[in-house]
Image (cartoon, rainbow, N blue to C red):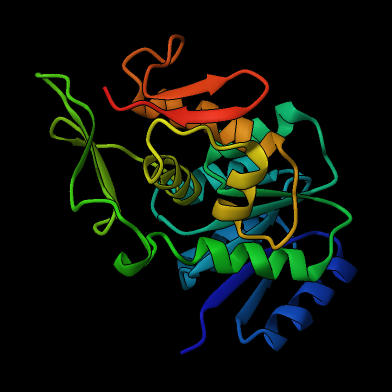
Length: 234
């Protein structure tokens, strides 16, 4: 059965072009021209994936994402002409998994959708054990279970987005080794080309707020100035 994808875009031409292209890729595409229409469509038939513009009128894309995230865990890609880092961070904070700046090529969207559809890589592609302790805090250890698609801090399952989870898995696959932003883009986003490095930085900041005991002084996901990021199990 084809995956159901909801395109939320107030520009008729962009929305129609996306629908045609994504239907050619095998998706069952529904459309919404406003935030209100999007929430109605989600209530009637929950999609498997969403593409959301930010500038939608009375209800913007940020609010749409927040409301959808209140009930559903599904891949969400933002498409927007707003290119400021603050906008990217706000969208990811609302619950988006990825951010594409207009104008864009449809093949870029389809590549990112394919990456987001895979929350966890097949076990044959990784050397990670079933349960990997990233922080051995005696009260609330941080444990990654890649095959199950979960991260726990003690008894609490952490609410990582799809991209945050994939980013953590990539870093955990090479503990103690620095991975550049370009390498992380290629492995996590799987675009087939180098994208915007700001995506990596914003997702790392969001990831730290969830996995670090003190996000202002990270010890698990460490920045190596001028080179990239490294995971240091504690």
